[in-house]
Amino acid sequence: MFVESAVRWAALGVLLQAGLQASAESCPPRCVCPDEATEVICSGKHLNTIPEGFSGDARRLDLSYNKIRTVGRRQFSGLPQLQELDLSENLISMIEVDAFQGLQNLRTLRIKNNRLKIIPVGVFSGLSGLRFLDLSQNEILVFLDYTFKEMVNLQTLEADENDLVFISQRAFVGLQSLQELNIDRSNLTSIPTEALSQLQSLMRLRMLRLTISTLPNNAFRRLHRLQTLIMVSWPTLDTMASNSLIGLNLTALVISNCNLSAVPYSALRHLVHLRFLDLSYNPITVIQSNLLGDLLRLQELHLVGGNLLRIEPGAFRGLTYFRMLNVSSNHLTTLEESTLHSVGNLQVLRLDGNPLACDCRLLWVVRRRLRLNFGGHQPTCSTPDTVRQREFRDFSEKELPRLFTCRPTRILDRRPQEARVEEGATVLFSCKADGDPAPSFTWISSHKTKVSSTGRIRVLPNGTLEVRYAQVHDSGTYQCLASNAAGNDSLTVGLYVKAVAQNRTIPFFTEEDWLEPLVPQATNSSAETAKPYPFDAKTLIIATTMGFLSFLSSVAICFVFMFFWSQSKGQIKHTATIDFVPRSSMGGGGDGGDGGRFTMKLI
Image (cartoon, rainbow, N blue to C red; front, side, top):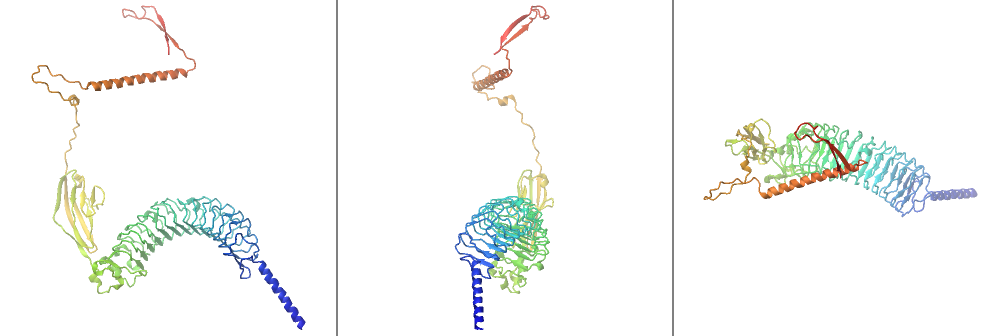
């Protein structure tokens, strides 16, 4: 029995030693292979080349943070089970064609932060099962045609922070399953429309830090499945064509940190499925009324850090699903209740960071301070002085009617204003009013139309009506309407313009009008006063000289023309013979004398 036990222990030791030797052989030097060699970790081992001796059962290989410079042809052909390969944070500048052949089960490939400048066509050959590819933080200049043509199952492509200047029209051919594409911080100066149109399954497109100034029409055509479009930090983008986003069915759109001075209403009107809109950090000054109504499903609008001065009444009219408005860090003094379609639907309101005037216009917000979500940032009053720096949550219900008040508008000078002028005159009608908040002024013309702030008849910033170059048809009554949130007041003025007869006689000059004035003669002279010539001697000499030079020029041109014409005729005759018959000396017929002939030499 003792002998049998010894034999068993010896056999077990041999098997254990063989297993350890096999395990050591399947894990390259300086690498760690936990989990029965299905995972090989060689990260940060100062490797200059890709080691050998991997187990054929390996499913994950991490070669990141080394000094590898080249990936050779069929470098990983002995790893048919590999599903994840990480080559990030190396010095790779060259990947040979067919480098990844044999990795038919590979799902994730990371080549982030290397020194690739170009990817030859065929590098990704054999990666038909790949789902995720990270090429970010390289130095890639161009994507060539058919670079990704065999990657039919790729879903995510990270290509941000490269030196891309051009994406070929057929670069993305084959990416029929791609759902997410990120192109950030590149040198592209225009949208690669043709290349993107190959990605008809794309759902999310992110483009950050580009130097594109204009978004043209049909910039994203054929991307019918795109749901999220992110354009951030385009400092020169100031124009979006009216059909730039046509054909898209977006649910989320971000255009922030750009140079848009107005909400791009015409470009947005097609996005009837849009739910999330972010226009933050653009120099937008106003959200106009009744221009967002086409965004039927809009739920959130973010416009943080802009130059917003006002949001006009009815700005969100028709948006029945509107839930969140974030306009923090702007220059708003108020937000009137009439801006929203239904106040009861609003759930989140961010007004912090604005110089709010706490008067009757904001009373509706303060009364909902317990139900509204301010995103953890309470709005704060800036004016009047009695409530300066107080947060909305600090007000009690009893003091609201006393503090949040407005003073109705009142016209200050109600004396009749009437102007009777002739055509062409300029007329000014003043309209001064006070109130709290400060009233706005609207003028209604004699034709019952609203007068704008531009044109021949216009309203000046101080509320004065200016009529320039008055015409007869401008006559009539004009009404000034001064209004604020507490009420309005009006003033009527009269303008009467008289027609002026026009003198349409055409000026007529006689000969004397062109003559120089006569020099007075002496009183003791008996000679008759002579009329001077119309032109003096100097003028006559100049005119004669100019005419003579013109004549000589014409003659010279004729001679030159005749010379070249004669040279182009082949055989040239230098003499001409002319026959003639002299006429009768008495003026009768031409038969009274003998004929004659003479010869003329041609030059």
